[in-house]
Length: 393
Image (cartoon, rainbow, N blue to C red; front, top):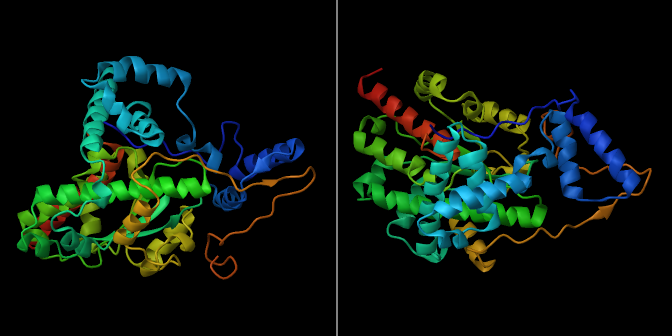
């Protein structure tokens, strides 16, 4: 039983067509019909086609639940909730996201998936109802943990996924200063709720709907010796995975960068145990010369990556992000994207540009949720990593 990550869209269509061929056909049809287009997304699709990646309108995230799925949600899940009113706590994005994570992309049996969905909607809905103002709450030791994690929020990739980064810093230090595992989990709930809201906000200004994000974990400040302590390893796992079950189906890509050799070795031992679809989402890499090209090939332009990680997006702290979200009225339901449009006249082509995605082009040219399973790799690797240090390996 358990959730696996969503299937990665194949570069080739069912008819064997490439993304470039599909994009050309689509644009030809739009031009004939005089269809209104989203210029930002069209420009991003140009880059995705060059990279051989799925185009924006091919992602499952942008599609509503089908009539059959809505019926299943109503009759088999909501009807069996202990308190069906918790569904009022979810906005449309979260309602769809949890269904996709627990039902559509879950590799358990149907009965198992339905039971997981009931538990997840119930647990998460209750938590949302009990913490309606968590973004504005000042939590104990918040500055302590935020200072160690140094979370920075960037822009979006060519498919609209928010890019954000953290630095696994002096975990031993926060343990010595009295941060408990339970406190860390609550603090992480606030951070992940902020990221969820920031992804919604990004879609409101860009379109279409997305609920997954790109997460970058920087291990450059990780103390190898501190990971020999079980209390430090427990805290690292709590920080990385503790709140994940409340945010299922939010992981698009995970990059663990500046990873020490022994960490990468530990991951090699663990990786065969991970579902292949989930494993494809994870990249364990060294420094900038390794991770920047890998990110660009995955459709993440330098313009979306924070400057401190080698990108061009001005660093924005999680505190600043939350401040902006509160000013925008969050937490709140997602608003419909108001498209800034351009009509495509018949016979005209769409020629829109954005930062090139590959070097050389111009200047730069399971009861666990999917996201928890992916991020859990870090905790597992940290445990193996710490054990290797302790044993002198």
